[in-house]
Image 1: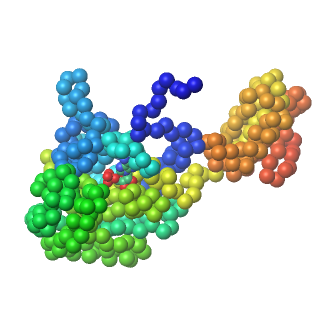
Image 2: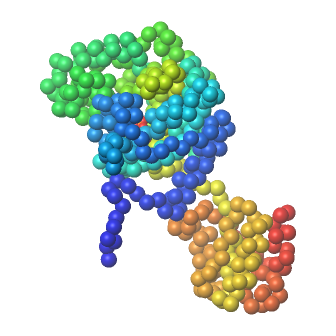
Image 3: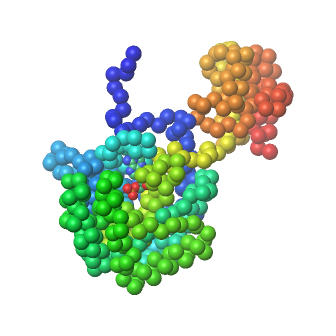
Length: 428
Ligand code: AMP
């Protein structure tokens, strides 16, 4: 029978064990980012539409055609957040950025929404894990953010990732670059699709976001961003590269990298995984020194990144879950359930971090052992990563004697232990 209701196109349910992997990744993010002084921020999924058109930019793909926007019952235009940086900046301004520590270090993890064509690694509801360092203009803050990012990726087992880096001028340099780009593209504009032709006049930097091969061909030989940097941005860029070299972080420079959001200036970067293909970056980030002022706040420099958590989990080289011991409490029959549950509680009180699961199916010893062995062998549906299984059998005899039988599956060793010893034993 096919179900009457299905998840909306482009959205997915995460069930164990997949959901446990997401939780493990988020927990490692909390540890690593926390170790750099970042506290977590949680902002609403709903924001006013204008927040994104002002920050991400009216002519970007995200705002132009990918936002989930609707009117609420009072006719206000609201949007499901397509990214989290704008919400973080709004929240900081609303709370009173002047009273907050400087630099302000914040990280987040949460759902984002974009109306894109769903495919591998691209969803309409997806998750991002990001961090923002607010209030420091110097290149050391870009470098620290990238070093932290690499610490995180290394903790997850990635070894061969490389940063793609570029520097995009702000202010007058940006205008000059846009003009030079227009002059390069205009004579060839007939080759462009309708959307890209509109971009030439409105916001030519956005041409670099185009996936159209014809547009990519037109952009070959175009002026590059780095030719238009003022001396300050040029030395900032040189310093970031020097920091990265000193920190042993591999990078390549890419003159075509501008990132698909208008608020980025100066440093921009991406990390691409080979297995996802060049279109699918795992993460992106950069400086956004004008965003606070653009949203009505003081001129505060900032730098940050957003990792696509779904893509990250898809290409993880290893299992992010901490291995756990499983104590599989197995009653011989339903009459042993109360005793089995008392045994499980005693075990839990002394084995923090272990999974203590009572088999309440009533399947009995033989089938219960088969189930426990299947879990140790790596049952693909089991929520946890199991390092060892100890089957704790309790039948009428154990109940009468107030003992349990513990069998360590990988060692094939079984021993009888008094109930009273379970909590005590486990504390040692
Ligand atoms: P952006 O906010 O566009 O800079 O994207 C940052 C990261 O979010 C990208 O590198 C992707 O890993 C991820 N991402 C963006 N859009 C999607 C999507 N539709 N589905 C899954 N991940 C996405």
